[in-house]
Amino acid sequence: MAETKTDPKKLFIRTYGCQMNVYDSERMAEAMGGQGYVETDSPDDADMILLNTCHIREKAAEKVYSELGRFKDLKAAKPDLKIGVAGCVAQAEGEEIMRRQPMVDLVVGPQTYHRLPEMVTRVDNGAKAIDTDFPSEDKFEVLKNRPKARRPPTAFLTVQEGCDKFCAFCVVPYTRGAEVSRPADRILREARDLVERGVKEITLLGQNVNAYHGDGPDGTWSLARLIWALDEIDGLERIRFTTSHPNDMTDDLIEAHGTCDKLMPYLHLPVQSGSDKILKRMNRSHTAASYIALIERIRAARPDILISGDFIVGFPEETDADFEDTMSLIRAVGYGQAFSFKYSTRPGTPAAERPLVDSAVASDRLQRLQALINDQARDVMERMVGREVDVLFEKPGRLAGQMVGKSEYLHAVHVQAEGIMPGDLRRVRITEAGPNSLAGALV
Ligand code: SAH
Ligand code: SF4
Ligand code: F3S
Image (cartoon, rainbow, N blue to C red; front, side, top):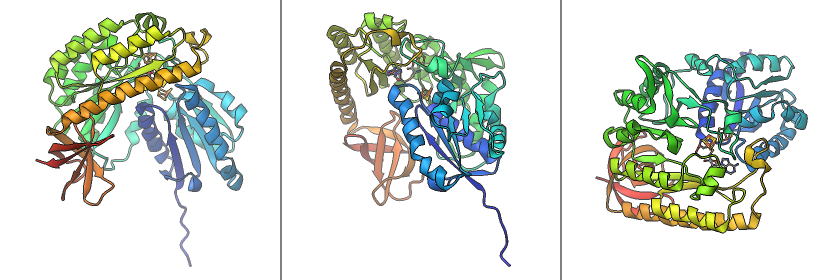
C-alpha cells in the first residue's frame, strides 16, 4: 500500500520596489514557514501567491493590478489558490484592492506581516483578511522562529523604517509611517546570527538609514555607533548602509567612512535636483551648494568613495534653467552610479496638486541626464582597470569556470579561476571594463 503523505503547501512571493521589500519578503517566507509553507519559484504550482508591492511611482503601483489580472486563470483552475497583496500598495490602498480585484484574499501592510500566520488561518477557513495597522508591537519578533539554514554571503538587515521628511513628491511617509529605529541589541543579535550562517557582508537598510537613533545599552546609538559595534563581529567582513538623506550625514558617520575598515567606500546619497528653487519646492531642506560641500567633506575622509544618487526630472515647475542646474551639480559631484526617474504624481502628496511639466520635455531631460550619468559611471569603471580591488564572490558566472562577486565599490567583477567558492574574499587585479561589469584576475 502506498504511504500517504501530505506535501507541504507552496508559497510564491514576487517582490517589487526597494531592498526593504526584499528583506520583508524573506521575513514573510519565514513566518509562513511556521505555517507549513515552503517557497516555490513558480506561481503555477503555488497554493498561495503573495505580491510584495511598491507604491513609489504610478507605474509601480499599476503593475500590481496587471499582475493580479494574470493570476485570474490560475485561480479559476485552482479555486483553493490564495492570493495576497503585501507591501506599500497594500498599505496605501487597503480594501480598495479587493474592490478592484475580488479574487484577492488577503491584504497586509508592511508593518503587520508578523500577523500573517494568523491571517492565513482565517483565509484558509474561507474568510478575507485585511491588516494595514501601524501596531506598537515589534514585527521583527517574527524572526525568533526562523530556521538556521545556510545563507548566501550577502544579506540585508533592516535597522530603521519609515520617514519623517515628507518630501513633496513621496509616498513613503504615508506607506511606511513615521521614522522608527530598532533597538541596537536586536540588530546585533540578528547580525551575529547571519554571520553564523555564512554571511560576510551586511547592508543595513532604512528609508532614512542615517537618521538611525536606536536604543543602545548606554543610551541612544547613532548609525555610526551601530557600525562600530558591528565592526567587532568576527567573520563579518563588510558593512554597507542605504538609503541616506544628506541632512542626516553626521560627523561621526563621515569619520567612520575614513576609519572603519569594514565600512565599504560606497555611499548612496540622493539629492533629487540641483536647483535650489526646486529643492525648496520638494521640501528637501538642503541646497545644491550644501550637498556639494557635504560630498567634499565625505571625500576628504575617504577620497576613493564611490558616490551614487537618485534624481527626479520634470518635477512640477522645473524649467530648463532648473534642469541645467541639476546637470551642473552632476558634473560637480561626479557619480559612480545613479537612479533617475521622471516625476510621477502620487495622490495625497503635496506636489500632486501642482501643474505638470510637459511629458515630452521631461522625457528629453531624463535622457540627457542619464547619458551624463552613464558617461561618468563608465569613466569610473575604466579608471578601475589596472587597479587591485577586493572581491567578495557570490555565485558562478555565465561562462564555465567563471565566478562573479562585488568589489568594495559595488561593481560586479567577473573572474575566470578554479576553486573560488561563494563567500570567498579575494584580491583581484582589474583587466577590463565592460558596460555593466568589470573583469579581472586573482592576484
Ligand atoms: N528614502 C530614500 C528613497 C526613497 S524612494 C531617499 O530619501 O532617498 C527612491 C527614489 O524614488 C527617490 O530617491 C526618488 O528619486 C524616487 N521617487 C520617489 N517618489 C517619486 C515620484 N513621485 N516620482 C518619481 N520618482 C520618485
Ligand atoms: Fe521619501 Fe524624502 Fe523620506 Fe526619502 S527622505 S523616503 S524621498 S520623503
Ligand atoms: Fe516602494 Fe515602499 Fe520601498 S513604496 S520603494 S516598496 S518603501
